[in-house]
Image (cartoon, rainbow over all chains, first blue to last red):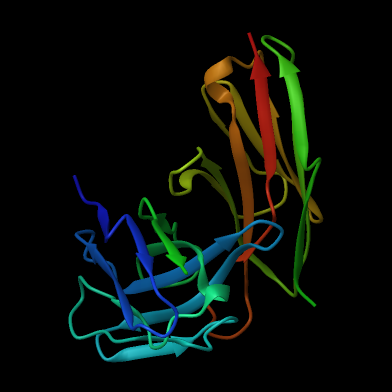
Amino acid sequence: DAEITQSPRHKITETGRQVTLACHQTWNHNNMFWYRQDLGHGLRLIHYSYGVQDTNKGEVSDGYSVSRSNTEDLPLTLESAASSQTSVYFCASSEGGLGNTIYFGEGSWLTVV
Amino acid sequence: EDQVTQSPEALRLQEGESSSLNCSYTVSGLRGLFWYRQDPGKGPEFLFTLYSAGEEKEKERLKATLTKKESFLHITAPKPEDSATYLCAVQAHAGNNRKLIWGLGTSLAVNP
């Protein structure tokens, strides 16, 4: 079955370190997304991509970057981790076009100390 | 401003006690309304997509309905395994925007 795999599932890092969260999908979807989920804020979009070499900023993109070199992968990089970036991160994907279902990975729990 | 509001924030039911969750929205043009279920420590799991007012979809004990201003997720004779957070999201017509606008969710607990 097609799926989205995130790694690592849990990570503790120190303030100022660079961290990369991996996301790999086997749906062959054009669209990929990174969200963070925090109490009181719900799911907030960090970055998204509509295809290879395409990346776009979401509503909370400061301090994060992504790159899309192939269809399957969209790694999320925290350039210099801050305590405010302690959160659970979800990768998601969907087929191209409006109104198509978005499928989520299992999440990556990141703690910045 | 596009907005999605879910109510109640939390709901506790006895097993077999039917109820409804609400998702009200204000968007410039609805492309789709999505319901997801999220279990603790897991990613959101897709349940339904509704596209136009009057549409209804069912899955086991769940039934989703849509009007021009809101959607309801009806839970009939719930079981403890229905306990989860239920999330609503809408997709608007605006330009080429494929992003979703998310509600904060309703946390449902079903007691045996």
